Length: 322
Image 1 (cartoon, rainbow, N blue to C red):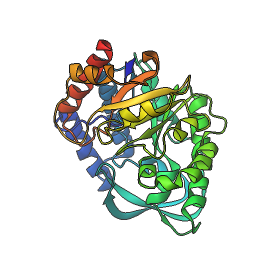
Image 2 (image 1 turned 120 degrees about the vertical axis):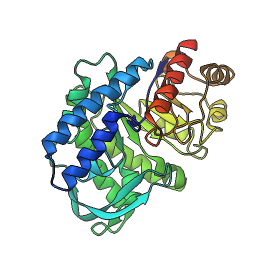
Image 3 (image 1 turned 90 degrees about the vertical axis):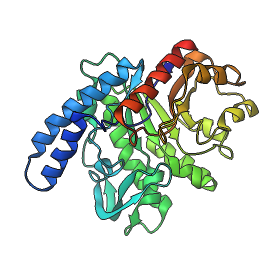
Image 4 (image 1 turned 180 degrees about the horizontal axis):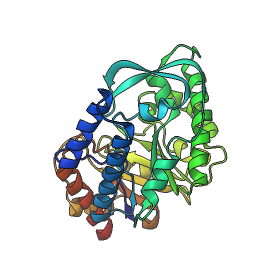
C-alpha cells in the first residue's frame, strides 16, 4: 500500500508561494518575463515534490505549481480553443477556472506536459504521476461554438488528449490520472462516457487512473471498473463516504488498483492515521493491500501549505500502519 497526492500541493503561506503569485502578477503586467516565471515554477515544483516525499508519499505530483487555473493551462494549448474572460467556481471543489470557448475543430498541436513531467521526474526519489482534467468534464464546462453537442465535443477532446497521453507515456510517465468529476453529476451519461474513455485510452499501456472526486459512485459501480485500459479507479471516500460500502456489492476485479481518497482538502480538520487505518480494516471487499493507494479525497490547493503538508503526513503514516 502506498500513499499518494491526487492533485496540487499549495504553497500558500510560504515566501516561495508569495513570490510565485507576485511574479505571475508582474508577468501579466508586462513587468517580468515568462522565463523569470519558469525558473520560479521550477523551484516551486522541486519544493512541492520534496515536501510530498518527506510526508511519506510513494507516488507524487509536481504540485501542479505551473497551473494557476486547474483546467486552462492545458486546454489553452489545444488548437481551436480560446480561454474566456469569465471565471467561475468549479461545482465539485470551488476552485476558480476560466471557461474554455470552443471556436473550431479541436486538435493537439504537440506535447503540453511532457517537459514538465521530465523536469519533475529527474532526481526525484518517488514516482511522479501526471494529472489532467478529462475530456468529459472539460466538454461540460466549455462554451461550445463549434460542435453543437457535448458528446461530440468530448470525443474530439478525447482524441486530442489521447495524443498527449501517448506522448507522456513515451516520455516514461508511469501513472496518468484523469479527473472526471462531472461524471458524478450526470451518471446517466455513463454509456457515452465509456466510448469517450475508449478513445482517450487508445494505445495507452502505462497505468491509466480515473479519479472521481466529489460524491458517491453508486449507479456507476461496478460497471465503471470494466472500462477498457483502466488501471486504477480512485474514489472520494469523504465527499462520498458510502463508496467504501459499495465495494461489498460486487467483487473487485483482479489486477485493478483502487485509490481511496481518505483526507479532505475542503477543510482544515485534521484526520488521524489511526482513524484511517481502523476504518479501512473493517471494510469488506477491498483488493489486496499492494493494489491500494491511499490518497487525497479532494484537491489540497485551497489549504495553507502547513495544513496540506500535515494531511499528507497523515496519509503516509496510515499507509505504513496498514
